Length: 83
Image (cartoon, rainbow, N blue to C red; front, side, top):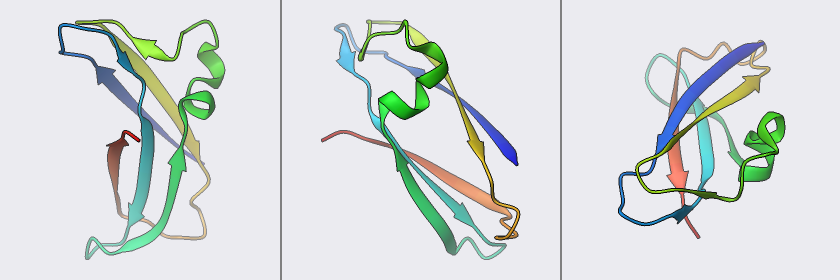
């Protein structure tokens, strides 16, 4: 099991809705092996006290636990998705 920790920072002058996160695990040639979208409700599971928005000039830490042992992943891509 691997752990990915990322920071989401709102540099806007206004609050923003938290994005969904698309995590793609890649091989040594940067080809996708597996991909999954995490909603704010999933990645904030341990931080349920947070709202669904991030205030101006604030940041939050996100931690994702990933079971990738059967994939032999060498890298990843993490994208922010807004509907």
